[in-house]
Length: 327
Image (tube, rainbow, N blue to C red):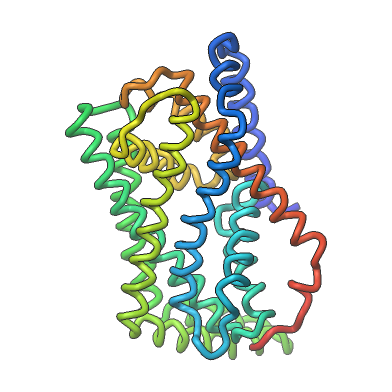
């Protein structure tokens, strides 16, 4: 087992222990009836999540070459599978995105263009998320005053923008491909010769994508819509828990959830961290701590209800990954 894999498993185990501790110290006489009252509303919460998933699919679709990209339904299936991996398996948050790159390559998109589309998709997704978080925390501070997560959330959004600026410059300067070529030059054999060739194609595909300003704007718009639609899931969950949230409250909570999930990206699925953060944020936004935990548990249940079938699909159809794909 590699050291990176070991650290991921340790982080996942630590998150699971934190979640178990939070559940043990709760008053289930209050928390139990809250969760039980949701009932069939859980189905509507799951159904709503298909809307941000579709928006995210459209954001990715804008970056794929029109002549070889699969249809929207098939791309949505791939997006669902990648999201399932990120939500449930003990992998870093990019594990599902690497899966998407492979799936779409096997489906006929050239490998270099598939990889470039994933890199740009992730860049735009995090950029729009950082702006979403900063705007949401500012609104929460103006409405509710400074809360316990305001400073960490602002720091996370600001650091994300700074890191993205550096990552964008790396892409535009060709340093990512140059690093691959230098690594290949130190090795030998046909595999590494292929890596050098792929690095050139990847660099060219990135340059072409960043030059397509209209496609980039469309992709960023869809990504931002996806973050906004996520607030609908929060609103529905709070409604079924017996609260009367405003749309602004739902948007603010979604901002905080996403800030925490991305700041804790090394903890698979932000397990435990997400639950603790929502318990802290609840009183800031006028909700009792048990409501914050109940909200987090409903979100976790939605991830399982949608994610487990996604993992099962991957397991039952290994041929979707086994094809040679286009170079």
